[in-house]
Each structure stands twice: as structure tokens, then as C-alpha cells.
Image (cartoon, rainbow, N blue to C red; front, side):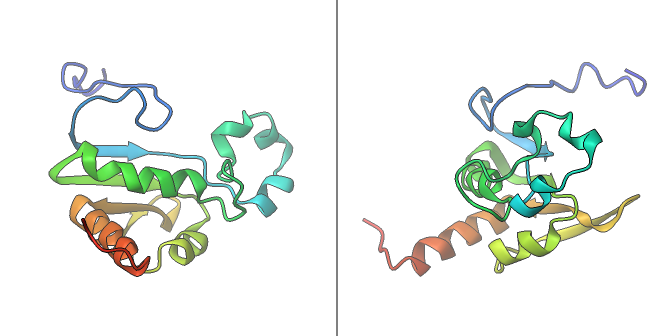
Amino acid sequence: DRHQLGERITLIESDGFASVPGRFDLILCNPPYVNATSMATLPAEFQAEPTIALDGNRRGGSDGMDFIRGLLREVPQHLHDTGVLVLEIGHERERFEAAFPKLESLWLETSAGIDQVLLLTREALIDHLSRQYLDAGSSPG
């Protein structure tokens, strides 16, 4: 409202892309990404938050990247050709890079530093998914 963008922005609440129709130029995401070790030692103020908002291990992992793995598989089909995903991962850059070592990422400088928010292009995500497919030893068709 302050920037008079209300007519140009639509906010959608959804679990991943379950309620999100269409394709976009920009997707901003602050997903659950806290790893298992950190979840066990969160300060009291964070323990007041719903676990689903923080715990990135919802599919049995321990590195905090479970939700993000699924997100990165789905994002390309929801982005226009030149679209980008801006993703907050907090203090989990090391775990993100370990989980996605070949994914071309642009780390953005924020007031919190240069290791908490990254930008991924649709092209980089498609390349990443293609490499995963090939690395798995599968062949098309």
C-alpha cells in the first residue's frame, strides 16, 4: 500500500504450489529450512513458532533441505522463461550448497549479509534438474 503496488501484486497462501495457478516472473520464498540439529537447540522465542514454518526436515531428512528439494523440482513450471526464484535460507548456505553443489546460484547481499538469500533463474533450475536426471542413469523416453 505504501508504494501503491496493491493493484500489481497478488498474495497467495499455499503449501508449496498446491494453490498457485499460472506462471510468474518472480517467486519469493521463505521456506522451512532449519536443520535437525538447529531445531533441537532453537532459542525459546523460535520455539513459539509453528514447527511447520521452521523445520526443513518434513520428509525424514536432517539437513533442512527437504521442502527446498521439492520446491526446486516444481518451480520451473511456474516461472516464465526469464523468471527467477528468490529464496531465503537463513544461516543454511553451507547445507544448501552441499545439497545442491552444481546448482548455479547468485547470492544476494542483504542487511543480514551475503549468505542468507539467493537468486535462481529458471534456466539454472532446468539445467540442475536435467543433470540430476542424467546423473541418475536414466534416459528419456
